[in-house]
Length: 353
Image (cartoon, rainbow, N blue to C red; front, side):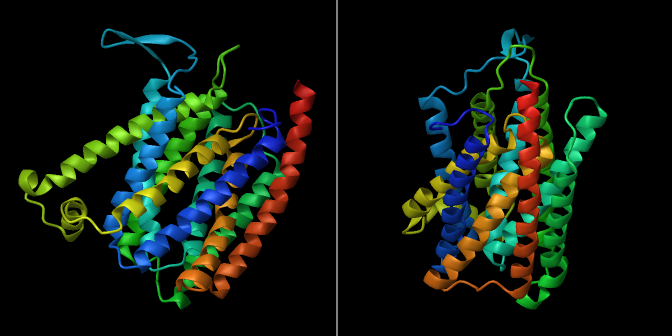
C-alpha cells in the first residue's frame, strides 16, 4: 500500500476502498449473468474457477507461501511450520465459504438483502470469537463499548431483512435451501475467523504477523479442497449413482459449457480480488475480531447497496425495498460507532509503542 504504515487507519481505508470496488463488481456480475439466462450452477462453477486462478497466480508469482513460523514441527518425516496445522483447516472452511457466498446471491433476493444477512451474521460471529479468545487468554485487548453497540445495530439490520423481508416475495426462514446455505456459511466463517485471530494473537516475540503467508496457505488448501470435491461431484454418477438436478447441472457446465463461460470466469476474478482485501481486513494488525469483522462486513454491506442500485438501473434488477433501506440506516449507525472505536484504538496503539 502506498504511503501508509502497517496497522494505520490510512492502510485500513485503502483496504476498504479496494474491498468495496471489487465487491460491487462481484455483486453486479452475479445478477447480470443469472439475469442473462446462465444457470446458477454454471455461474458458480465458472466464477469459482476465475477467483481461484487469480488468487493462486498472485500467491505463486509473489511467493507469498513463504512465511515466518513460531516454530517448525515434524510431520510425516518433514519439517513444516506448526501454523499449517490450523491454516489448512481454515482453507477447507474457505472452500465452503466461496460457493455458499455465490449461492446466496443466486437466491431470489436482492444483492443488498443477501449481503445484509451474510455480513450481519459474521459480525455477530466475530464478537463471539473475541469473547472466547478473551476468556481463554489468547486476546489481551478489550472490546470497546462502541464496538459492542455497533454489533447491536448490525444485528438489528439482519433481523429487519430476515423477519420483515417477506414483502419481497421470498420467505427466507421457511426456505430449506436458503437456511442450509446460510448455516454452512456461518459455521465455516466462525471456524475461519477464530483461526485467523488465533494466528494473529499468538505470534511469538519477534515473529512477523505475515498475513500474505496466511492467505497463501489458506488459498492453496481451499483450492485443493474444491478441486477434490469437484472431481468427486463430476464422477458421482458413476461412483455413487447420484442423479440430483444440481449435480447434473454441475457436470453439464463442463460438458456443455455456456457460450459466455469465459466472461463468467473473468467476472470471477473480481471475487478472487475481494478475497485478498477480505483476509487482510479480518487480520488487520492491532484490532479485535469484533472491529475487523465490523469494518469488513459493513464495507461489503454498503457495496451491496451500490451493487443493487447498479443492477436496477442498468440490468433490470430489483429495486431495494423499504426493509433494505431501513437496514442500511442501521448499518450506517454501526459505521459511526466503529469509527469512534477506531479513534480510541489508534490512541491505544500509540501509547503502547
